[in-house]
Image (cartoon, rainbow, N blue to C red; front, side, top):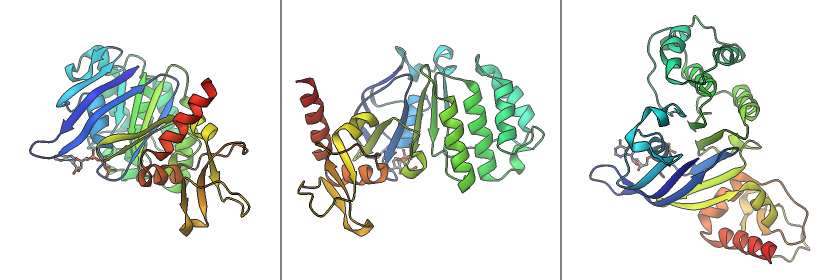
Length: 283
Ligand SMILES: Nc1ncnc2c1ncn2[C@@H]1O[C@H](COP(=O)(O)OP(=O)(O)OP(=O)(O)O)[C@@H](O)[C@H]1O
């Protein structure tokens, strides 16, 4: 659906934030885009939405260059940004002004979500808290029913019940025609929601794998004392959790935080093991 090809980007007079980025986002998936602070996640989402232009390379939505900002592309993509300014108008007026840009917008879905988020259509947006404003944008983004929905740190500012409500709502809108990309450094918030992990590190793609491949090839947990398998990565400070090659062990749930730390501390090693597992499966 959306392809990022050989993309390089730098802000004026500064280092490259993104170097040689190649990524493919396809319908039916929920991608988790992870990276440390300042690794370029927001920048990449803005380039994908046509808000920033790459130095070199392309970002294509169904073959159309996002940098051209053509209506036929923009109507299929919605970004819930990390930082935003919203006008001092009611939720109702906001919906009326903005919804016409999105042909698949569902008023019914929007107001259902507004109710679920304990907001009222007559609430004036500028008088809402940051978390409540974020909920308005999340509800609006979902109701646009665009093919591609991008969310930048959507759970920032949400309280604990709202974070689980967010996960529930996102799981309910996922379908085979839609592609969702959620960027965050709070990996725990996406637990049991995403099915594909992308990690940016040192301005490059350090990891890009579907979760089922990760759970096929890797084992997560606290190894038993008689397990002789050498851990790929371990964290002694957190009760000895480790990542091991799965081999003939039972499948475990992917520990996203451990995977993230493992990828950053052993660049290449985890990818090499997953690629080896995939090659073995093909033979
Ligand atoms: N408008 C700008 N002008 C110059 N540099 C910028 C600008 N916006 C971001 N940067 C720099 O680009 C780099 C990437 O920033 P970006 O916001 O994309 O990172 P991020 O991964 O989203 O970070 P975080 O997780 O903290 O939100 C950072 O080093 C940041 O300082």
